[in-house]
Length: 168
Ligand code: RP5
Image (cartoon, rainbow, N blue to C red):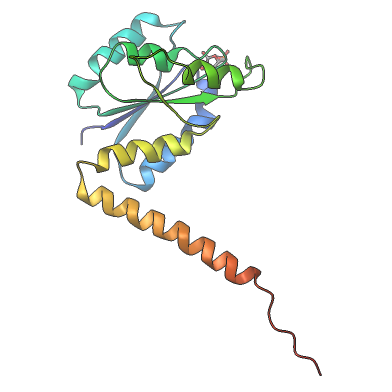
């Protein structure tokens, strides 16, 4: 099976956040690969990885990084694949805003679809939704997922409603 999504991260220490993207993709049975690609510690690996991803069959790249989080933007510079950026609150983050703004504020021309701080779950779901534009079976799985979310809310709302009290 060809991996359709690549999950990359700047450090093994990002894994506790980035694994949520992997879990989302697993839930929708989307084949993915996951590895460490550091923009500043392995710049040549980053360049090669980004340039070769498309020819290997990858359709979407999810890239997570913390602090001065340049990995998603630099990967986006080397590929025409959609790149989803996950700002990670890491050991070198000030408060997380550094990672958010580093990934979010890409100059015009090189987009990175940025999710919330530590929002790797949404990155996985968004990657599945991008693939689902060309995959009706996957689209149906996403519809089921959304329906379950709505059902869960309605069940919680029902449980919250005060039951009528019988007065003796
Ligand atoms: C970034 O620096 C990584 O994405 C990580 O979030 C952060 C800190 O890296 P480590 O020092 O924990 O390896 O490149």
